[in-house]
Length: 191
Image (cartoon, one colour):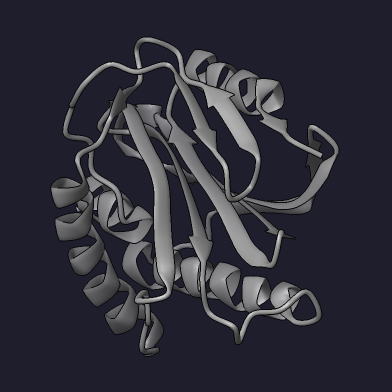
């Protein structure tokens, strides 16, 4: 149940596709290089999981989730518990003036969903980080899985080039967490 909840809430499920390593997203001038052990996730697979995740989030948070304005840039996975995903929102309702409030609502919805589904409050942290000079709000949620394993979810958000831009990643082992952070710290935003 916990693993199904994780996949649904995160709106991502790995389905291994072609092996690529360097990606450039011109809308944001953002480039990143994925390690060879991360594989692209097919859009059909992510769409199916997003639908399931939307239903689960709506039930547990009692809110209607509108994801029609969300554009996926990339989703790549190492295994069923370790992934990186980047999206942006095309809605004109989210602006440079109100994106922090929108982001607060997203974080609250994620947290409420975890608490209701898991029946306990996970460990959370929220602070700012910088990736290549771009300031992100980092929200991390850690919760216990079976057999002493800890699942780490990290949600990064910023407002850049007129869009609410998010990066989400997860992992269960420290080495993968370090690997993902190195990927992000090595990514570049064209100034």
